[in-house]
Length: 152
Image (tube, rainbow, N blue to C red; front, side, top):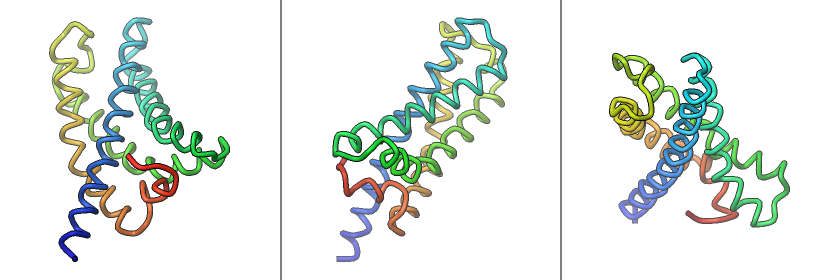
């Protein structure tokens, strides 16, 4: 029984982390593309990318919770509880990685380094975000708070 519970917890953490990765990646890529298209500085690009990663990440949680009948305020609370730790980890690791890869922050959308540095940064961020999600789920926190409203 214990092994099954551990596997179930591992799968739930994998689902929560994959959910986070998708929202963060979409938001970050849209933010970086927008900032580059508008000629914004690297610092503004990072801020916009991180902000949109949070918006996309929270939106992925809020949409089904809103459909389940919660008010916008209640759904916001669920999203904040479910995703904040994971998004912070994903964004911190990915952005630090992009900043330390020579030339990555200055790369354009047509440059391979733009894409592989973001993707590798998120791949590196996955393990610590998964560990945090697993820890939170085991304590009834994080994504556990939203399982009353929908399942991934």
